[in-house]
Length: 357
Image (cartoon, rainbow, N blue to C red; front, side, top):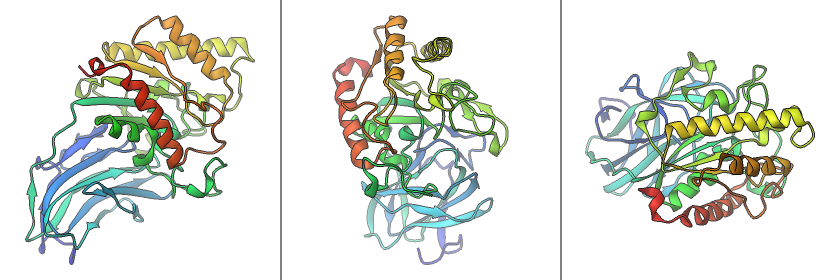
């Protein structure tokens, strides 16, 4: 885009009806929807050569990025280097003067929130109707693996994470959760947060007052770094398939499952309570209880298997990957996420078309 200002370009408001939004997004201010969870996105179609995004970023930690997909091709992430101020960042330039579809998405979890303030397109361009929403809907409750953290560290496949990665290798687009959703042609709400455990006061998220998924699952704004905690309105989105991939971070500070009977029993009770709360919101959904291929003690998977049996619900199932819990000491890289997605997709498809009704 030659000049990023309103005088030389057409401004498109977030509330114009030109965007397809996905994810748990805060629309309290329709002119500045706030992207909170990884992979939250705005998709638009336009006829023209260039476009830029207007946004305001709220920084917590790490390097922060937005992702861009143009006509199905993933572009290099755009780093947001200024925080707390309105910015205009070029998204695409020198495109052929024809129709294009662009996805703008949040790459990471609560390392930042961002307000989407609109779009600038060149004067000769015009917006096209927003794309249609997928009829299939999924939701994933997970940790850093589900958020796609460190997935782009391709020199470290099957190995520990590179030192001081600081978010530069993180990209929700390549998480197993989003790859699975794309394979199934489903919309996804990715309720994933790096370091989060099931239980409060465990895991790695929000030190020193650690927050677990048992407190975050029903929130829109779940991180008080950025202001008040706010509830999510569950009437806005009802998934057909719910993936629960929580538990790997509950081993911090103590890997107690199968070793401490009292703590193990308490964790199982809280997990069951969590599933029942979700079931109350989504009475017809298929629930898939799982972990990932990240190295962990199989006692956690055995506990989840026991939980699935105890719940005695035909639409609550336990799933294990072929190398579950023993695939890698580091985060999941893109090829590993693709293999996970292949297995998870096949498992979901085995339930037939009826789950999407």
